[in-house]
Length: 74
Image (cartoon, rainbow, N blue to C red; front, side, top):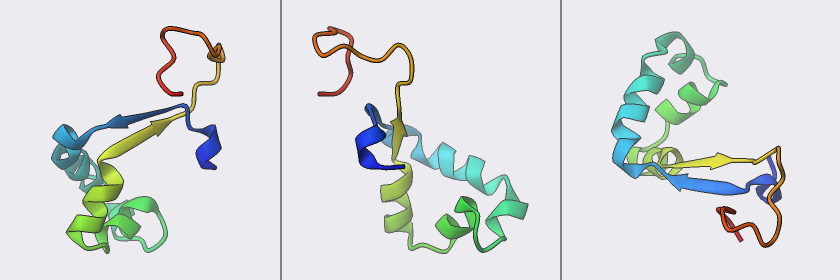
């Protein structure tokens, strides 16, 4: 997804270990070469952690207005 589609990013570092264990719980996926769990499993730990410690979201509806006080990104 292009970066321009991202409206919100959330630092999930405190739960990154739990997230990684959840990914590994899908062992059949982690063992396959192309799905994301398999790709992450083959990365060095520091690179993997950099990837999984942030979640990205795209707000679809309602679209944020420029002066919306609840808008999460600039």
